[in-house]
Image 1 (cartoon, rainbow, N blue to C red):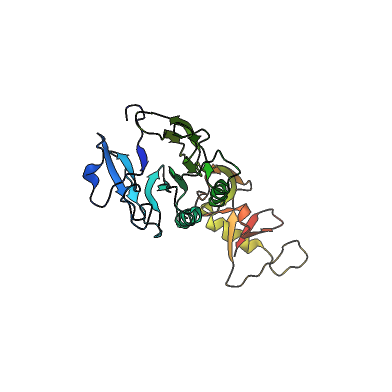
Image 2 (image 1 turned 135 degrees about the vertical axis):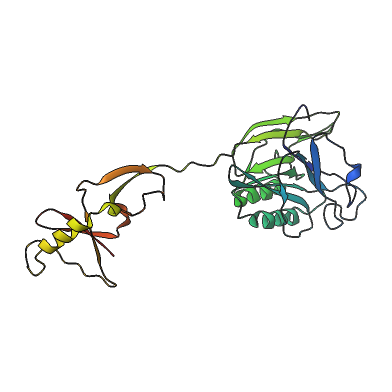
Length: 294
């Protein structure tokens, strides 16, 4: 881990059964969370293979996410970063498992994560994305498109004496940078893929709000001006507005509107924003401004 000091590391093909944590490698400073191989999943009753999990760096607060039951090996974790909810999952498909069964199960899992802001999905899918015209590849690409996920790995990740394939994937709907595909032959035929997630909460955009300071009304002057109005006259330019439930009149003693810069939903209390369309102005001969609040 000195070579790749990551906070979270997903692993596939742990070969661990229930209660077999003691057989897993111990990484100083990390703790293991895993989903044991299931006879109904990638193990399929076979003697080898299957099992997925995560090594979490000490201090990383992640919770296990319950996902729909399905005959595949998968595991999902929930984290909250910068006020945003992030779901990180890993899944493994053995070469013999039906592609439709695998992708249908992943579709149900991703669909169940609608409450999360971002999703990251990794794993060994045993589908070579370098073979763009292969039926399996087309099905996988259709799944990623429907799920709204981008696949970020573009170079081979699995090596044998006679082949180089791209079967280990890194998919997400969040911006991923610093992707490193590191093949260590003495460790595995699979490359170790590391990356950085750019998780930044968007700041609300300030906007200018024009308002009238209703709370600063001088009630005595307001009543005096009301008494000076000839309410029985007609054709003198004073419009009359009726409203159900009563009408509340207020005087704006500041003829000029006040412009201030506020974040959304933070306009001063006791004020009326012009763009709310909740006020009707009455203009008298004396050019005093009145507002009817419905």
